[in-house]
Image (cartoon, rainbow, N blue to C red; front, side, top):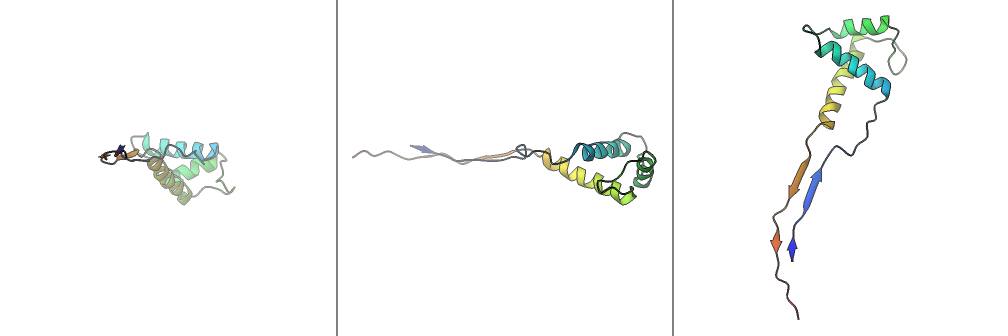
Length: 100
């Protein structure tokens, strides 16, 4: 008889709990922070969102701390979702089968 165990740790079984609006805000903030030669600051992004009439999830106007929080937590979320799977296979053990 041969025995071994397999242990798999993955994050690909989770479903996204972000709403479409949250994903939209995060993608917009990322584009302002990462796609420009000179990144736009949190205060300026909040001013742009307020000029467009966008509101936070709780319905208030954007401030720079809201933008920073959305960006920071979104990066943590992306890192967690894109984490590599961990597969551990134990060393096989062979046992002799004895018949009576």
